[in-house]
Length: 161
Image (tube, rainbow, N blue to C red; front, top):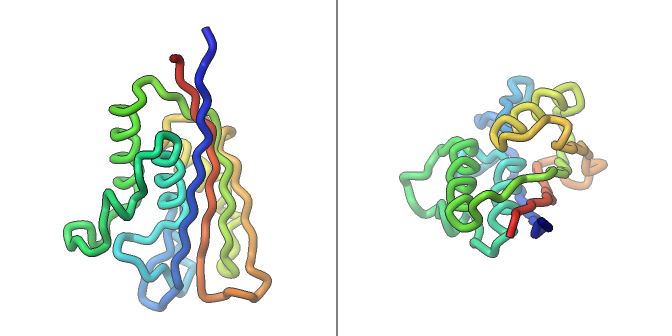
């Protein structure tokens, strides 16, 4: 039996400000003096991931599902966003299987390389896949945008017709 394949893509970015905690892929970065200026916890990797999942079946975006104008979503843990998106995806495309995730996170500081395994395991755990199926690339802006954090995610989803 052949499988149907869908590619998803999502992006997110936030300005960094003092007094906020930086979270990437569900992992807190206590060594960062700044975090994202966002309505939720501002985890750019999980926001981009959620949008990539939604895009596989044209199900909108997280701004539509979790509007920043709605106070009930203030401070929302982005792991909850991903969980709800996975539930929505399962309702729409029962039996869909995530094959792999490729993500690029751009952040000048702190450097994320030492946390690569923690982030990959966190994302894999949320998605129910092996950490080896989570490809992470960490970049800096080379000083062009030192006051922001950004993520882009592409993923492959398969489903038996």
